[in-house]
Length: 151
Image (cartoon, rainbow, N blue to C red; front, side, top):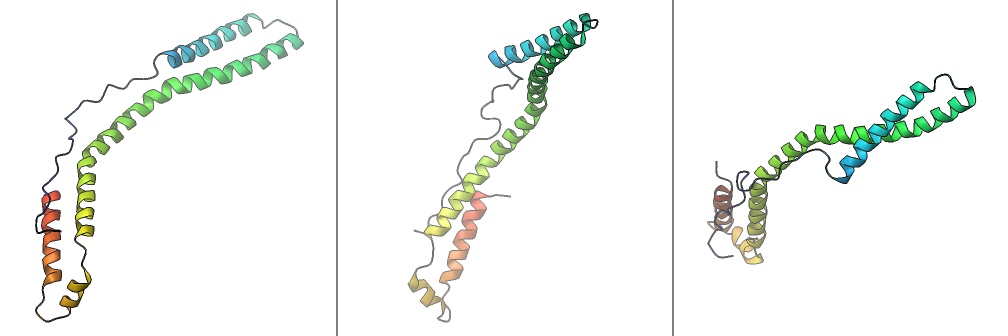
């Protein structure tokens, strides 16, 4: 590679583009989840009104109720889980955006270092007294690293 060094890349910063606001479930999944919880509540009311039924019918009702309850609790978990996790997801996305430029700079530095790899001639010159080819390569790499990662 020639003696030039790459300039610092301009990456996206967290303030460049606003991500769409996150909310809980929406659309069809929200309707299904709320519907499942409402069916469960309706079934609870049915069970409360049927407390005086015979044992066989009560057993059948509770068997069906257990299935409805499992679906309703899964729906409630989806409703509350999305809300709880949204803050963590937003935090992770912000961290990824903040580190995107450093990651791109790291890839650029790696590409520059690989492209500037010593040839066989430089290795032979290194063994001669006073040859500073390796030091020159180190200085170029340090300069590129300082430009890509200031501060």
